[in-house]
Length: 606
Image (cartoon, rainbow, N blue to C red; front, side, top):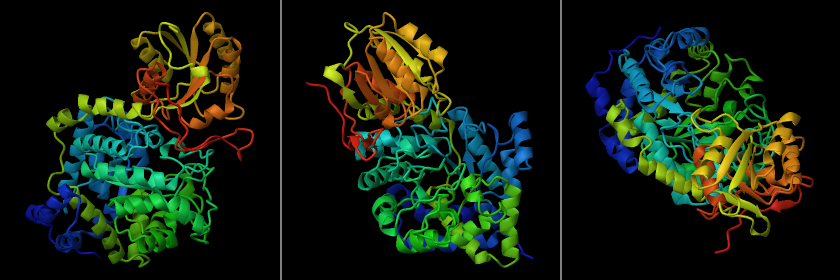
């Protein structure tokens, strides 16, 4: 039986942060202050019931725009999946230490609503017997993974920043992103991605990576870590020990990385080393098997040799380790859902993210302590790391967001202008036959825009064909949009061919063109009309290798408005192309041959 000590006073909780306040501002932690803080934090941990301790380790999703009054459909979803009605009830019943926001869970409608949701969650947490603020997190990588949309500032994603190659821009982008997240109460961001994308067929990373050069990726990761943490948000580099060379999506299966230990040290490790050197607050695990690092072939999330042996002991990391989502198939293939959280803690994890069934996972950890498989001291070790981070972020001092703070920070004109400027330096001109670009309304006024219209990463941008057409129209062109989709049908291709008649140029937005993609047929048929065709890859830059006959080709790396509008400014000569490929584009028929090497990017003649 676990006896509860008296709850700590507000004074105890607030004085925890005296030394940490300065540390949070300066970004450095004084060792003496650290030891002093730890003693105070340990007193808070000692007062927690075992149930509260278990709760601190979990970061959980919850449906709804409000912590106490969500829509009925969200109440129903919460009851079905978690057994509670609201976010406030989630905190009350399970004492969760973290909550993760998703757009699909209806957490992120608009900035003031997000701030109010965050405050409702914090009020519930600070009303608990042991009041500890919640660490609210999300995946705001920017580019193709984005949970908070307009009117917040949307910035270029990792591979676009890799194409820009500027550490200053990468740091500024992260600082803007961090300031806006902090303003709405989100204080842990699952970014930047530290995976080195050396496999063009990678289905899950791709443009979420800064590129294929480990040293270039390492520099940009460190820059973003500093930018986020300067803004008062915990950065999270992911996915350790490196997800860049997979051909399987870990959401749906368990990938195996065949790198030797030497290859891992050379290819995958540098960005994580760089993040640790930059003072990274948290690192996310990967649901991947790396036999060279752990011959048991357990996923890294559950591997003590990888998380404790390599990450903690070899790389010297003592920050928070968070799992990737425990609802992903990659971590569930080998062990049942009740074993996974226990094995993750035994491996060295601190935060258990988004289990499919919280009651199963939470009770499994509780039982493992009661049965002696996990010690309470092991839980305390992780809770101390989590509380240290909450102190560093100033959450004990001020857990709440303010309306004025949201208005002052989120989506400001200055932030939006920075986003445009940064995006402009990322657009990469891959091909420009006979100097066809830049286009001028005087010679190519009438433009047909066709192509893929993937759903907006944040639900608030696009569709891409319309965004491209509108941007061209604003610059004096007469542009019409026709959405042909990611897999255009024969009828849709005929419609595009008919629409091209009489046009001066056709702009095609391509999306992850494969060997069998009907997008290839679309481009070939448009080229055959004799109207000049220009392609812009709105996701992976590898598309150009599978297309032929176009007069020019650009890579935009994402289909959010900021990147597409920057590409149009380059297309029209309002900005010069400055992006350089951060990954090689290989010949489609012979991958041993490189069509465009790392660093390739054309410019306009001055």
